[in-house]
Image 1 (cartoon, rainbow, N blue to C red):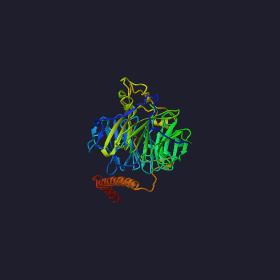
Image 2 (tube, rainbow, N blue to C red; image 1 turned 60 degrees about the vertical axis):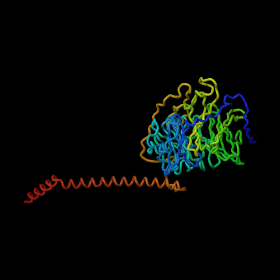
Image 3 (tube, rainbow, N blue to C red; image 1 turned 120 degrees about the vertical axis):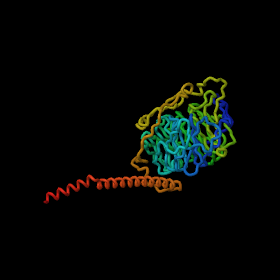
Image 4 (cartoon, helix red, strand yellow; image 1 turned 45 degrees about the horizontal axis):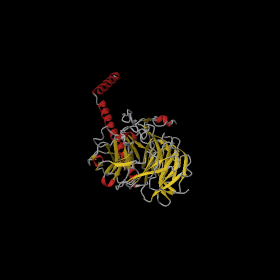
Length: 495
């Protein structure tokens, strides 16, 4: 297959998105003074929804992130409250798609935690999570919420395993154990019935998540895959990676046949990781390089040429990561079709970038805002686990996008950490392989020692109370009188 180098001159064709442009928010609508994490893990360190912006921050001892209301622009106080319950660095954060106040985080301390953010944001630092999920034996690098089901969370650890958590019971219900190295990326199809993964073992996989069965597998030799994304209902996958000549590359795949990519396109010779973002409503693909300042965007079609280059947003400031606003949080009056939140580490700056379709009319533009996945789950956790598939519940951005969500997240009462999945004890003693793992085990043992000391103290107090009660009973006058009367009666009978 011939690999063609893409021309960056836009080919003009009849597309309503041909003139989409990126507009950076005014300085007063940016977020400043945030100590963005210096961690080099290949994640975005940023999550955003219609109400809150969450950023992983640099912190000494453990990991933390800040949660700021999206309307609270400007300089952030250095003592702004943080979410800081993890004992290791936070590696990924993701908002629940159906609960604006619920966010999940994973960390080097091998745990996944679920947090509930108060309606107005944090007034004091939050250290108590609503759920602590222990099941991985090594640090957890990725988390993803199921796209149509409430209460199902996927986590991928450096133990090469993916755990599926049912948050209604607070336990892992399935372990996917088909990878032979670190999992780099997870992506769901629209209804969440398929999971695509990229892995350091140079394989691209399409998995049926409930059974853990690998449906398709590509052993990619010419294209080292880093990131993968499902292209909506097109039955296509797009991957970003590196070619054998060390140039950045994207490839398009048929999800039912991974034997050969449909097309491969070289992008440039830069070294930063390429993050793909796909908008199923507009069929637009955005490519943003880590450490770059630019964002390229394309339109994707089912016919040749498949990938149509549109334009490039340029900026001199390099991006560490990018958060994406959900559709119902966009400004439809300004014809905004996508919004990034760009992390600029050196300035401690979060910069909103709006992708806008230039239109003169101020009325609602139905052709660029089709019905889109909303804020209501299509399935319960038990329904999905039983084998039911259902597409997302769609909403119109014209009428219902400000509709409040009435769902309430209820954390289960948990008595123990960890569990047994597929007959394997997830908290079996695994020897530490890194300094972070050693620290994590140390902290866990310290916690266990504290708990056992507390138990011993409580039992000592109980023993003392029982001893005092026993002495009181022995020294009771009633007992002495009874003993005396018994002895006198026995003496009388002997006479």
